[in-house]
Structure formats: C-alpha cells, structure tokens
Image 1 (cartoon, helix red, strand yellow):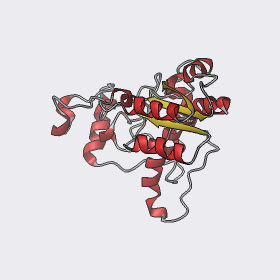
Image 2 (spheres, rainbow, N blue to C red; image 1 turned 180 degrees about the horizontal axis):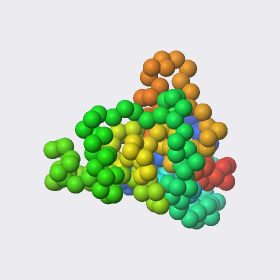
Image 3 (tube, rainbow, N blue to C red; image 1 turned 30 degrees about the vertical axis):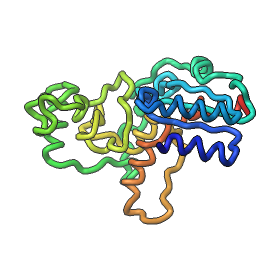
Length: 243
C-alpha cells in the first residue's frame, strides 16, 4: 500500500514529476498496484510510463533488475519512454575485474575499505572454495539450514572475476546472505567494492554525522538498498524530458 501512498501524496501536492522504483515482481502483484497507480495518475492529469530496467545494461557490473514508473503533471504522454532511454544508454556488460581490480588490496583500516572478521566456520567455508577452486559450496560444507532444498543456492558462493556480480543487498558483508565472497581474495567484498558494483563513483561520500559506531550498519543499508546511480540516471532523464 505504500506504493499507492506515494501516488496519493504526489497528486495531493501536485508534484510536477514522480519517480517510483520497486522490485520487478511488483507488476505481478495480485492487487495490481502498478496498474492502479497508472490509472490514478492519468485520471489526475499525469502522463506516465513504466518499465523494468537492467543495471548490467546501464553501466553497472551487477545483475540487478528494478521496476520504474515515471509520471509527469500536465502531460498526456511522456515524450520519451523509459524503454527508449534504456536502449539509448545501453552499454556492454561489465565484470568485476573492470569494476574493482584497482582496489583489490586497498584495506587502510577504515570501515569503508575493510571487511569484517568472519567466524571460524565461515572462514573454513571460504578456504574450501579456494582450496578446491570452486564457486559454489557443496552441501557437505553448508550449515543445515542451507543444505538440500534451500532457496538461495548462491549463499556462501564465490563471485566470478570475469562476470558481473549478483544483486548487491544489505547483506554483502556476510557470506551467508548471498554470493559475496571475493573471487581472488579469501574474504567478502568491502563496502567500497560493493559501492563500485552498485555504480557509485568514488567521489560519492557516505557520511554519518553522529553515532559513528553504527557506521558499518548504515553503510550496508545505504549501499545495498540504494537505487544504482546509472539506473536512477535513466529514470531521471525520462522525468526531465517530460518536464
């Protein structure tokens, strides 16, 4: 319902343009929130367009799909569609080597550059992957909750140097929450590496004004929950063109 709350607020304050982002499965929702949103927008004088954008086609070394809806007030139809913009901005798929090879051993002691100290069990799992030169942990090495029948086969997985990363989430500093083990080093990826894979330029600063002891948690949330900038850029162009 928060999806429709955004629509209601936008219409109430007569927002000139609106961008809504969500998971791709939002378009399959049984309550048809996206369809309802578009009907509400159009009945109130907004033109709108929606599409699923792919991060790996827009300059990110990451496989991530997100649904975007763009609406503009006093506009019957958006002059340029999200699909047209994504096609115009389309780039070849980048891999991990392209994105993070220059910060391979940059650990300077800062939280942004360093990786967490893992439990002995998790370090043994990482060692097993490297010692056997494999990328997926066999059932014999997994905890019971991630053995046969588990939902996430990429958990405790090692990333591949010559391929894009899987979707970066807030759990990227834990091997038990996805495929986040570095392909060349016996560790998980750092916040800096995760930010690169999300498409953040190094000029972007993640700053917490207070409660610095919460910085690691905040970093994981900011980076993992973020809309990758190249995807936001595409949606932004669509909105600006409509304005």
